[in-house]
Structure formats: structure tokens, C-alpha cells
Length: 294
Image 1 (cartoon, rainbow, N blue to C red):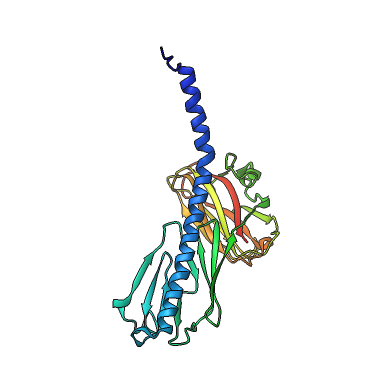
Image 2 (cartoon, helix red, strand yellow):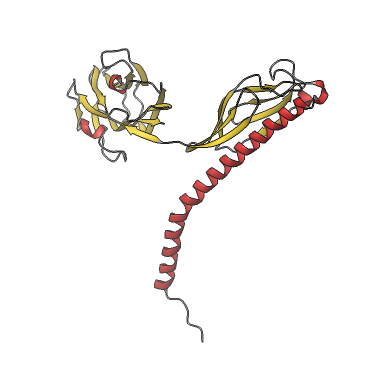
């Protein structure tokens, strides 16, 4: 007679399977992303070489080229994609949704010799790694792998002008956002508080993004706003969150900065506006940081 599974044994098996799925899913996702990246880079290189061979063979007595958009590319016949191409020869290739292109937008190969009209790089990215396709002056086309590394930098100090923010250090103490600074926005202060003296970079960056994570109570009339300056706390500020009374769930807003931005000059401020009677509502700053790619 065959023994049945007990409930405890069944739950143990389910638990082990759940653990295995938790461990293997990120690995599988990483494998998929990299596979899509390699496939896309190889297919782009093949398309570039096809366009070059068509031009060298003087097919249809014409030059051929490849035009790149954010998430697709087109092999075309003619001396330019925008002006004078023969659209009936267009071959359109769409990329996976996780793949994005940047760099050279158009390359045209000349008849007979197959030399490119531009040189440089086409960057194929999945948000975690890059593949760089290089076209040199004599028309050689190669690609290589590049890993994207992100460095996190945060402010290390604040100036609480209005004294209306409690636990201000919680705005930059942890990446998980479980702690937060609380700013009452029922009085008018500009600034109410500033965050500054950022951790300095350890590398030269290729991209830099300022991020602000928060949630907020909704008010009737009073308003809160968040702005940043790239020229210090006495410099000119640009709104990251324009003045608003709106309630907000856990939200992250961001802005791209120059990769060469001097972090010692980066400053973020909260300013508040009271209108009529006090609404007694709060803005909660969960985290402030930069994501710096190199």
C-alpha cells in the first residue's frame, strides 16, 4: 500500500520550491537580459555589414546605410535616410523592449569602397550592461562588452532653516526608504530646509541622475515644493516638484544631470507656502540620492 504525503511534507516541498524559485528567478532574468543584448548587438553588426556589402557591390547603383532610432533600426538605400532614400528598399528591424540604442544615428557606406560617412560608436544597452559597436574610418565594424556600474551618492548634511522638519537626517540615512524626515508645510518658508555636502565621486561618470523619494499628505490650500540647484545652495534652483497641495503615495522623481556635475555644488531644498488657515499637513522625505554611472 502506497503511503500518502502528510500536510507537513507537502508544505515542506512547497517551501523548498519557493526558495528555489526565489534564487533562480534573478539569475534567469539576468541571463535573458544579457542574451537579448548579445543577440541585438550581433544582428545590428550583421545589418551594418550587409549594408556595406550592398554598397560595395554597387547594388541598384546606389549607396546603402543604416538609420538608428531609440528601439529600432532601418537598412535603407540612398545617400541619406531623411532625404532621397528609396523607401521600397527599407528593411525595418525592431528591438526587444528592454533594449535601447544611442550614439551614431545614421551611417552610410559609399559605393565600391564601402567606406562609412561617419565613424564612432553605437551603444546597445539593457539598463545593466552595454555592447559598444565601433565603426572605424576604413569601415571595420566590431563590438565589445561593457558592464554598467552605478555608484550611489547622498547628501551628508542639512540646514533646517524653518525648524519645521523633524528627523531631517532620515532623509538620507538609508536606501530602503523605511525612515523619513517629516516637513510640515503649513507655513511659508523658502527654503524650509536644504540638503547639501554630498559624498564625493570615486570615479568619472558617464551619466548622473538626481533622485528624490517621498510621500505627502494632501492639503486644502497650503503647498509644498522641492527644487534643486547645481550651483550651490545660494545658486539658482529648478523645481523637481512644482508647488502642490496634492497627496502623494510612495513616489520617486528624478532628473538627469551632467555627468561632469560637481557634487559639492549640488543642493536640494524643500520650500513651503501657507495660504489662509493652516492645513497642518506634512511632506515626508524618504530618500535623496544620485545614481552615477561609470
